[in-house]
Length: 310
Image (cartoon, rainbow, N blue to C red; front, top):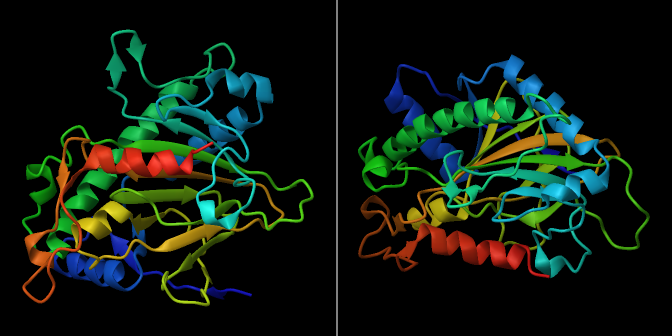
């Protein structure tokens, strides 16, 4: 049975930004996860998004498949994704719906896909409202993370990361009843997030676990509990790369509990053209850069190819 992990609580509107930045640094070095309070997203909106997410996932499969994932937007069915290819399982027991940058468009229209208004009225407007609110919270948090890294608070803005950031909202549904299988079944198999920062909201059903020492064997898993009104924030691989492994991109997974589970993950990624290279405050003669510079969009594209490999 997994132990419970007590995560630090970070107040986004604390007037003492220096102390807050110090607390963020400690959390990111030691755990890579923390709770975020006073983030500006009202509980009323959380409940609306959760309700509308449940409505979408309750649609017949053939209706959901009309919006099957294209350009990393739209519906992903059960078992279509395997976050841990080494696990040898048939895929993760979850379905999801991706919403990308709201302003993204091509010559033939927007890249995002939306359920028909006659089937789900107000669905798009509610999701767009939530997307904008969480994006605002994430951008404000990035300024504090810059301070935590002993940088100017506008560092990531000047580096181009926050200029039309490549942020994605992912609605997730984990069924309570699973088909019988001889394999171990994961809601989300063990992985670390690929990008810069993730802000997660859940419906309160458990299952989320973290492994603080991802290279140690045997792995020790700890439960992360729901704290009402908060985001569970975690650092992604790209931020770990940026900080020369000072900040942890922590291994985590979702285990089936026998209960249906819904969550909303918001992945805040840099502008695809932003170059991710070791921060000067995170390297020295005794600790040289571990990774070469890379364009953020190229890095994410390569990681997603592995996740969705047929």
